[in-house]
Image 1 (cartoon, rainbow, N blue to C red):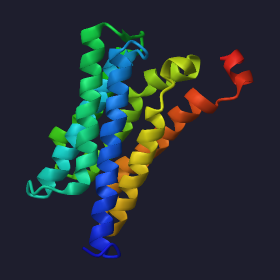
Image 2 (cartoon, helix red, strand yellow):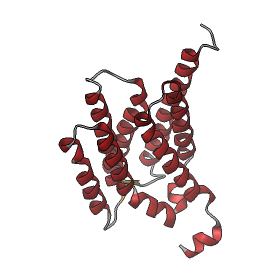
Image 3 (tube, rainbow, N blue to C red):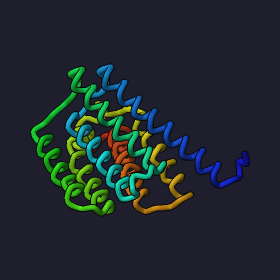
Length: 204
């Protein structure tokens, strides 16, 4: 095996990305299970559905032929569902008045999967809906940074950065959409929970 072979570098990068995604999900799951972080259940379950629908749409467009570029998204969808379920099971979750509305908005965008056969439309709308569903978590991270402070956000950021790099070996904008969005989201969560200036916290 030649370490300078592009295919070897690509698979090494992909495997590192998969490992980081699994590690990040594990850190989140154990944090919720141990009561150190409250899960915004509707957001996590909403994310799982939206990411899963996007994977299905892309596979359907590719005649159901498996594409390894989708594995990170599929792993994340599975992890999000587990986090939501464990939050409900342990009773360690938070909820607010806007949570249901955000989930309904996300479900409305997700209906595109059943209307359009175009994976671009489904994926873009799923990402928009994902961001809408994420509003409760972003709001809570803004008001209570310590409650959402976990090294998992650093790991998530690294995982999707590695995923983006691996996609460059066989580039596709469609495959790059989720990684770019999740790099931005995890970077924002890292900033809100770790690096936000203290004077802003006092005014929140």
